[in-house]
Length: 316
Ligand SMILES: [Zn+2]
Image (tube, rainbow, N blue to C red; front, top):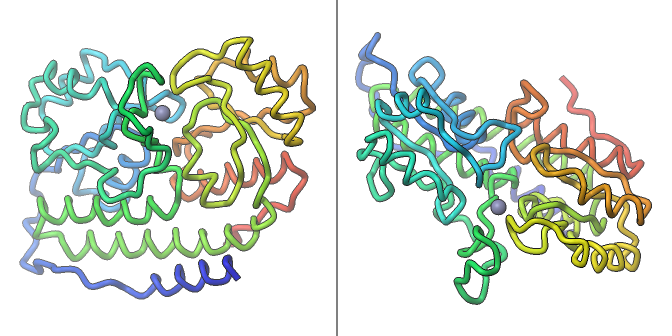
């Protein structure tokens, strides 16, 4: 019943929403809006909705840790001349303030109307009882990896659409049309995933970092532990030894690590527990060329295959 109701609610959201639009004439060949995105999901959303109207640069690559990005000097020059920024906020991008100040992009510092915080309005998971960086150097405000939930990404498309329409009001109609088309494709895919991957529910697994929590909750997978003892704290043999006991007790068959995370920790547990270790990224574009929906498709299929479960057919 829970799955059925979720699908009904999602399908109800397929009807077009009404947006305020400025239908004044197009300005034609005006210069492109220069957009910075901290992660591939925001960059791809800006490209999907803006297309020829925008020029997007994305700081974190699909196979890179958002928390540990280093901007090159050449990149800084591009940041300096940008008009609009999409970033997660909280403490996901602790490097961002330094990058913007270093580039002289004061117009995009947090608090500026053209610095768009993508975590706004998303119910936070794993919020610590106290703000304390001794628990790890990130996630002090809660888990910021919410773009791993397709339903959150659907709302993020609207946030991107709102920002583009505000800065490009003469193109409001086409931007909103693209936004609706994307939301529709994502919703249809999500309804199919929730149905075809219902058998993933209650599967226990282990991840390296806390980055998958929103994804796991959407598909009702259960994380019983992380290879890191705390966010962005290197795994220790003591922590991993205790984790192995938990994995054996909970009959864990799957470990997910991201491509930038050291394989040694997953190898340590795989030598002691009969598990499949999957290398998956929380960022679209890994594997190379995947868009947002194709990326979710890939990750779900890989998890299903690892568990000997059927893989959903995207059709078309
Ligand atoms: Zn994190």
